[in-house]
Image (cartoon, rainbow, N blue to C red; front, side, top):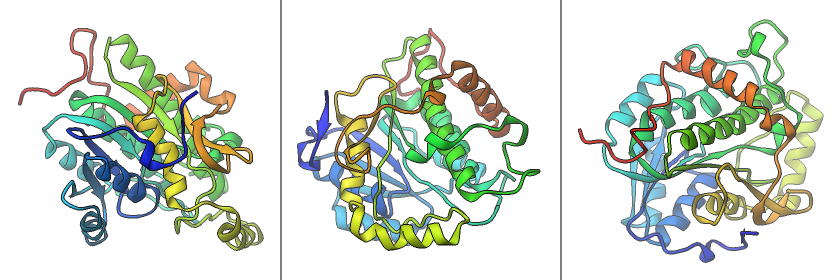
Amino acid sequence: MPTLASSSQIPDQTGRTVVITGAASGIGRSAASALAMRGARVILAVRDQAKGRAAARDMGGRAEVRALDLASLASIREFAEGLREPVDVLVNNAGAMTAARQETRDGFESQLGVNHLGHFALTNLLLDRITGRVVTISSSAHRSAHIDFEDLQWERRPYRPFGAYGQSKLANLLFTSELQRRLAEAGSPVIATAAHPGWASTGFRITSGNRLFDTLVAFSTPFLAHGPEGGALPTLLASTGDVPAGGFAGPSRFGGVRGPAALAEPSGRTKDPGIARRLWEVSERLTGTEFPLTADAPAGPRTP
């Protein structure tokens, strides 16, 4: 079974290009830094350009910054149009959590919009240039979630922040499953994998809507959680390790809370092909993007 206890164990990345969303801070920044140290050219796809440039300076000459706002389909298209070269690995890392219902620029509920729909659109728009892997970061919050197709955007039912977050993270894994099915059907060498960071102290605040619960989590995090370097290990394993197509990586100790990264078992809801296909079709309609490959056109750089 593949495991990763330290970022120093990842193989040499010289000559590879990795795009990581949300890489200006937290787990994304730690993963980007580790990959850059091993020789990868890392593209930090971030909304906050100042934070991105500061992160890139710390990583040295192998990191660069490009603007990407996952809450805007226009920004996603602009980013994809500006990236014409081959990409070895796309890491869909950026995430949002909000205490009250908010909407993206395109009118999507913000957690679903950023965490799932934004990455869904980005992946489809870049897939003809991706040569290795698509890695999508989920969360253990997916285990208590379900996809409510009758009210996907939380427009009619009372808004539950953690419920909306969990739905978006379940969507990440259903997306990975259906993406892998489509890649295999197209005969593509690209694989889709996923990861979750466990309990990581990164500055990402839990906003469940329950003040007592949120206070307890905030108080406990410095004592029980691992830092962004530990939280990035599953991302690095899913990006560079001997992980099977459709594989899911996470911390291996204390019930998936922290520790070395290893293969993990997602909830049974992630394995329903009917739900995965339905979510894909809904996501295509919402984003105006679709799977670009056919059996006659496997993944790889497209000639302009």
